[in-house]
Length: 239
Ligand SMILES: Nc1ncnc2c1ncn2[C@@H]1O[C@H](COP(=O)(O)OP(=O)(O)OP(=O)(O)O)[C@@H](O)[C@H]1O
Ligand SMILES: [Mg+2]
Image 1 (cartoon, rainbow, N blue to C red):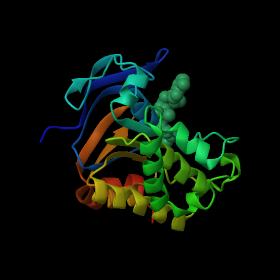
Image 2: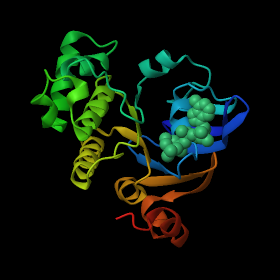
Image 3: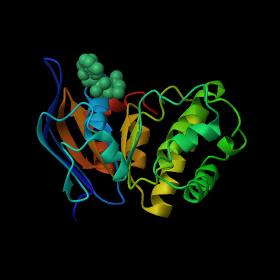
């Protein structure tokens, strides 16, 4: 199978600090792939590097058959990659409706309205709250809004950075359930960064472990879940 996204030998730096050290990673069409790793391992950097900010210094990033390593960020987004960044970054003073529309860039009104209905079907809570300001939503609702906004561009590849951060287990299940439904019903391809390794590996088809900016393990999610070294490092107390 030809990968939808493939990274080979990717490095990234913040000034003199090297955050990614030759990352090799593939995401196939229709897959949910999770990237797990400790705080500071470089997970968010990897997501952002895919979008071109920071830029990969070495290596190659190929999306849908085209080299996007040096493509401007807005152009990468236009080609069908959407990101729900860590910390949600919704617009606090804009309404739910306006936040969603911000994600629809490049889409005409009719198409945006149709996509918004799909987002509401996925997250009915948002539909009840279209006029509410983003900043006054609960944490879980803000996360739904951040994911919904990313979906408004009708991406082929959705990058999700820590969607479960700070949320109660019930809300985490709702959000992970929505991701699974979307993947099954539309074939949406997802790259998911998570601290919650247990939940992420149960949701994903495959997983990668990032340690100190380099991939140290990769495999079927079920296999990773069963490995003692994964259990010891990432799953203790993780249920
Ligand atoms: N803008 C920045 N400037 C300088 N260093 C940075 C910057 N962003 C991240 N770093 C550093 O790069 C390394 C990787 O950070 P990154 O945010 O990618 O980790 P992470 O795996 O997402 O961690 P977490 O699980 O805590 O979100 C860390 O050492 C971090 O301090
Ligand atoms: Mg992070």
